[in-house]
Image 1 (cartoon, helix red, strand yellow):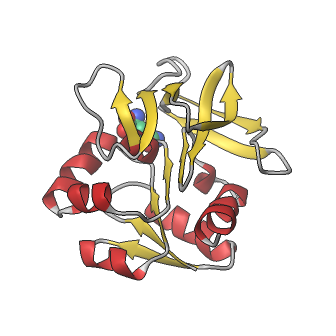
Image 2: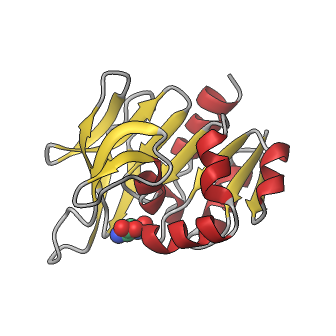
Length: 186
Ligand code: GLN
């Protein structure tokens, strides 16, 4: 499979590495035309408002709203996929029927690591949270895959996968493999 990583800002190289470790081809996506040559797209972590500005500038916002590519967003990428964001008038790509809240694990614990049970994945997943959002509410089509302290941190809606944390900063590429094999290749 050819898997693109939106390469405007954020943790791009790390995701490309996980795609290769999963046995597939990773492609940094910088131009809208490249969307025609890939089978699935990763929206990396970084800073969602910066990413939105760059997506508007390079024509991605409208193209991705129209696109039927399977998508996997981590952290800021999850925020991009959400229909609504707490405290904002409107979401960005609005692909998933979820409301997210930014920076929701508190300022004292800006970042932390945890081993999580994720539905659909056999072993625990090593997760790094950095100024992470959580998923505050989900619509009826959304399946909750994981929670931390009662907060939803991984969800799937058909061809869309959204998670609060950063597996790409670890050596654990199980979620990438799940996205590609269970969602893109199906
Ligand atoms: N706090 C960032 C945002 O709101 C997301 C953090 C991240 O991607 N590590 O965009």
